[in-house]
Figure 1 (cartoon, protein in one colour):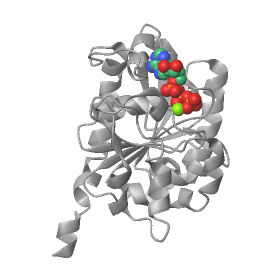
Figure 2 (cartoon, helix red, strand yellow; figure 1 turned 180 degrees about the vertical axis):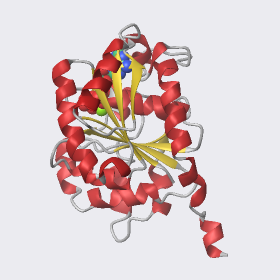
Figure 3 (tube, rainbow, N blue to C red; figure 1 turned 180 degrees about the horizontal axis):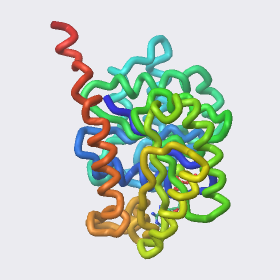
Figure 4 (cartoon, rainbow, N blue to C red; figure 1 turned 90 degrees about the vertical axis):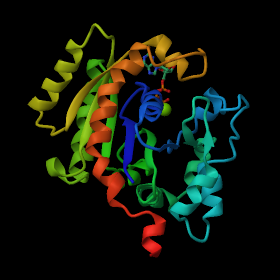
Length: 264
Ligand SMILES: Nc1ncnc2c1ncn2[C@@H]1O[C@H](COP(=O)(O)OP(=O)(O)OP(=O)(O)O)[C@@H](O)[C@H]1O
Ligand SMILES: [Mg+2]
């Protein structure tokens, strides 16, 4: 089904947090897959649905071990866990050293997630650079979301990264790339400035969106504040982006026959 890749280019603008927000609001069944070679944050930050600690050993690494002979979509479910709130997550690797051990698998994760029956995947790729291994997933994504804060220097870095990413994804007619600017709810002028800067540089992105810089809202996605997060500025600001991304990828959800249809 649909694969949405969320990434950053510089700094820690809130890619993981946004990925969790997107997953929490996603209107179809979805798995949040941590594919950041820098290591998992979710297993450290958030409890499981029953209030216990997530099992850090069950996720991307156990999936790879189980799929040593053949890594196929039918295996993925067995390695997910459910977060408090109900979002299913494929916990990422524990430490960066483990990323190096997953050499050829980095090329397999993209097709694997894109071929899952009945479930979309939101993949947190972390910080992408020129040669980072998780770049391999970008080619299978139905949409790429690059998260940036409004710092001018970081916007420049994103612009440069976008040039490469968009070229590799087939140019303006290839995979749609969205830029999300995380900034104060009252500073949406920064979003316009980023949009203008990208237009001037002729970087063909599908959309430039605003997501609120909202400390309290973000803490809810780190398990530090309990209760209903749906009224936070962060969640409310992300809702239009969820609509755009889910509408844009709806056809992917229905166009892949499920396993039963294939057998008949
Ligand atoms: N929209 C937001 N508003 C305010 N604070 C935020 C927001 N998103 C994230 N944060 C905070 O910023 C910090 C980094 O967030 P997060 O881990 O989501 O960023 P990241 O881009 O995934 O970073 P990394 O590159 O380390 O993976 C956390 O303390 C988080 O609570
Ligand atoms: Mg992150």
